[in-house]
Length: 203
Image 1: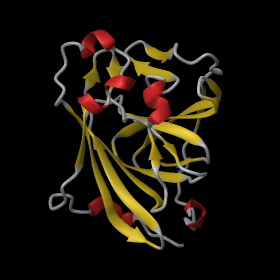
Image 2 (image 1 turned 135 degrees about the horizontal axis):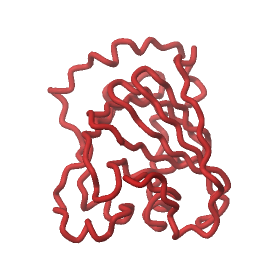
Image 3 (image 1 turned 180 degrees about the vertical axis):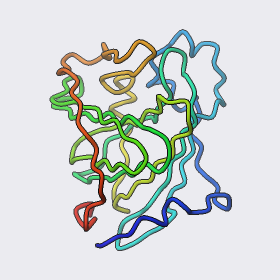
């Protein structure tokens, strides 16, 4: 499937009601437990506009993550894995993002983990079998688009059980999640600068 995503930046979201991710749904994955004790359950963390476009079995969403701190930790998405071996493609539409991707050998054993820093126009592809979270560590609103198969289901259970991904990004930098028994050193990869010619690999 060939795709021109230039119009994605200009979609009018005012007429679309987003799904809102509240803090009460994120408690299990937050690093700063002391901060959580006094934080309001109805704190809005980010907004998900799902199914804005559908094409050839793929769905296009937009997520908006305003800047804020969750205590010591920068605001982030809850994080999930994909059903089967589905991949996902992200486009940074506005702002700057850090994508953290991890592959698990077992629940408590991570076989690979890496981070990608991306700015407006950059592309990130989530490989098969990798869980991922998106972090907004800037002072500006982050807007990201994503293409994914309509058949893909998001699986949150591992991150919920392990209290988050294997690393947290905080004011003091990256902190390893002690709930994992084995985590390799965090490495860094560069984003892509151009869209693939076809998105058929997402199917």
